[in-house]
Image (cartoon, rainbow, N blue to C red; front, side, top):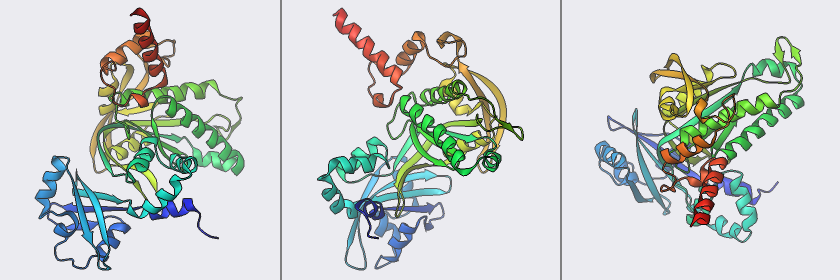
Length: 385
């Protein structure tokens, strides 16, 4: 069968990831990076050839200044690659990342003639702002985010549920939950990243930056728990499991991360970093039906939510992290007794804290109820004038 335009589009993307260690060693971290090394005519000055730098310390300076470097690389077959490198300080050294979108140029120009199909393809693969960047500039570069909030959910006893349910019922049920999560994430301005088996991953504060990322993320998972309680079906208990009503664990962490579009054939938008690992650990160490958050998230949201100190969690290769249960909205900010729905006072404090009257950054990804509140306030001002 011949490859479709969509498959050809997915197959053309190349991304390159290298690591420069503190001792000056250079390592290729993905297949495209290894292929790039093999395509170089000379390999005696890789720092200069690849990054136009002299040593590790120059890369460290670029990372500290958050500066990019555009380099034209000559290949042994006479071709050239123009790459825009980003330098990121990590635990083991400096990560150097770049994406080559030039092979997509011809295909992008061709698909532009059928813009509706093109946009549909992109928006089913990439976040809206990333798709817009590709359309506008024919390139999407890896980005570093100093602050974002990452969440993971996981179905409790999924393996046992899979044993008792037939495959069709299992997938339909999982799809119904994930579809619910998708709608909630959209409502609260949180970006879905991916699903991995029965695990769901999302992030707030990227690719569109916003100061309220942690609060919005916590609001979204509170809403998920509330809706799951509302849509409960009659129990179907087998082997101490309710096959009709599943329980989930939720973990959240706030910190820096790297985002990008990766893959050789079927690429995806993804995020990396210690923050992702900590968020995943918050979920796996959580309690069914509870929201387990790290100390960094707690510090961002304690003004809005009633939280309960849980203890210290040891994270492999990272250290110890203080953890908290996020139970509900603070009583003064809650419209309902259970603490799920924000009230008018919440809206006022939220807008004041994040200076939404002056700061327009990330407003497109604010929760819908906040956007509606801002619109109503704007109309009142116009009417009053």
